[in-house]
Length: 90
Image (cartoon, rainbow, N blue to C red):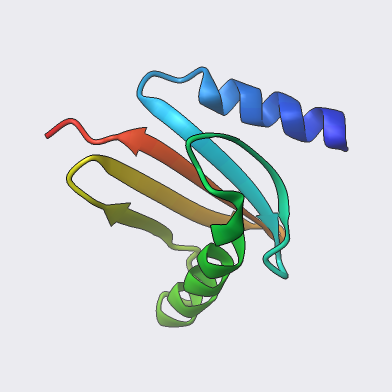
């Protein structure tokens, strides 16, 4: 599984504008990260998704955290949470 995860992370990192990617399990444990994302935020991202899912049931929401310099897109599915950090094009 680890080889497949690293391949997915590498594939996401190769997309234009992507500067970081993180994958966490349902308990907030960081399973892998690459680039400009801090792996210590994995638990917080999973918690945010758990709250968002309660608001948006039965759909699985996509969270977008936006700042002046970057966007973080977060989605959970199948027990995993994926966060993608992109340059903000403002």
